[in-house]
Image 1: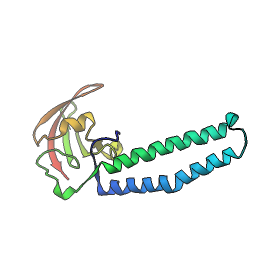
Image 2 (image 1 turned 60 degrees about the vertical axis):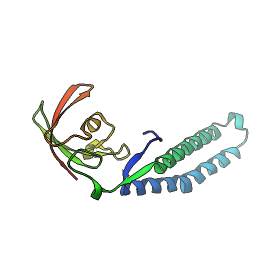
Image 3 (image 1 turned 180 degrees about the horizontal axis):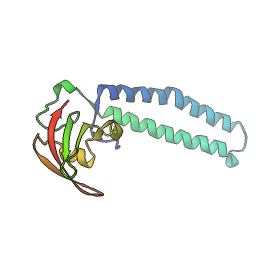
Image 4 (image 1 turned 45 degrees about the vertical axis):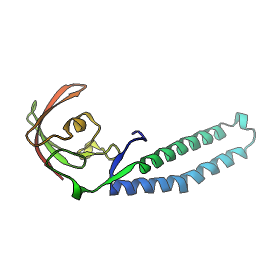
Length: 159
């Protein structure tokens, strides 16, 4: 996920991101500093793999903190009560018929942070999610995927 642009999230995800950031800053960051200090006490830093590993881990931690701060700074909290279900948008659940297999499938359109295919949550930036945006019940879409073209018809849009 990129750190720029607006990140649409639910209030629940926003709180989870803030909690994760607090943990990184309050627990992981002091632990990384402690690991570096411990490694430094073990002598010559030029040949100290433990010190190098601790410094690298700290760098990765700082990058993760910076990324999360960017995500949170650009977060826009969505309220499901304000969502229009006349067309597909983020946080709507869309029931589709795969016109190739005649199977029905329901996806909830979510932000990249919340996407989880096992739970039927697809990212607004995924090929299917992107193709569905703004469409209405009864419309058909063609989605180019690595395996070919998928054809879907929108059956219903709900919350």
